[in-house]
Amino acid sequence: MKTLVAVLAACLSATAAFAAGPVKHDNNAPISIASDSFQADLNAKTGTYSGNVMLVQGDMKLRANQVRVSTVAGKADKVTASGNVVVDSPASGTATGDAGVYSVGPRTVVMTGNVVLKKGKDVMRGGQLTVNLNTGQAVLGGGVRASGSDKGRVQGVFIPNSQ
Image (cartoon, rainbow, N blue to C red; front, side, top):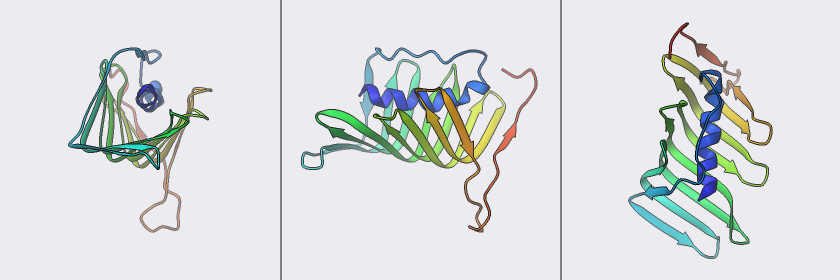
């Protein structure tokens, strides 16, 4: 479950450009998760929380339609959140997208589909957010426009002196 928290921290760390300082989060705080249902697949070594999934650790919250945890050798390997993914922290802001994948080994998070980062009145939008937890670097890409042929553009609106 600690890997789910890494997803939260990674998505929110991408909003660091909006924050006054570094993102602080207690990875040892208890994790609470609730959903309409849970299904384990012992053969595939996955656990899937479905329907109104809410994961909370400290003041960080993750909401999604579905969260699947894949394991290798009894340890989480990949965490996939899909459908109306929202990661929120009062201190760091909100990241939303259609889906998010945390790969434990390389320690990367990729959030895709209508990615929006908000902190106060500041907003950034793009098609894909990639965060490397090892380096602390984040890249927000434009994605594909509705026409399908041209790359979209990253957009940002920053309000001077906003919180």
